[in-house]
Length: 251
Image (cartoon, rainbow, N blue to C red; front, side):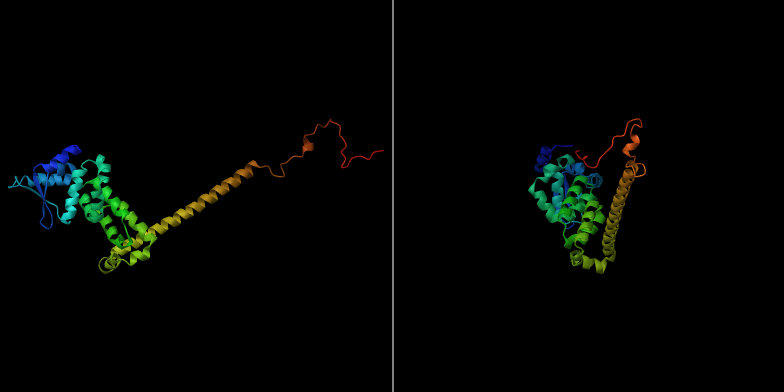
């Protein structure tokens, strides 16, 4: 795979592929970069070059705003190798793009199979999650197979369900997607059941440890019936010495 410096040089070189977005915008790109970053884009490029107009390779990335697609391509150029993920994370433009196009970037990273970008975007969306966006984020997590985001939505709803129910997303789901509301409530119910089982298990462990401790002391501590008087170990041939409770009177 080409190093980062080579990709920086490629930006200034003539593009050999055009990425067309939903609004008709055309973004110049390099097939070597896209193919190295995404197996889906690689297949699309190969398929486009088999057509009658092979000299003008066009790849259509639809379903997302053109700004989000441009940010997606920018990520692919700046971080084509998963080992360089930390280097890309340090760039300010990346955080701005995640804040502005987080949901679209997660969908693009999932659809075009860019796992390192999907992990980063999922973490960014979960970190920016609010009660107003919880319902939409839950649906996004289901569509993009994002378990960390799914868990973050459940935790937020468990923490402040009233705020989630006041959100526009909750009201919209009530009118058009009641199943999404039921899914969120089921998550909370399952979380309560898990907490109850954990609490019950904790009590069971406490009772078990207490019982084991009592049994241990009962087995290793002699009772009154087994205690022997010190006189039982006295030598029978040894003469008895009289004991006085008080000192004898002086004659």
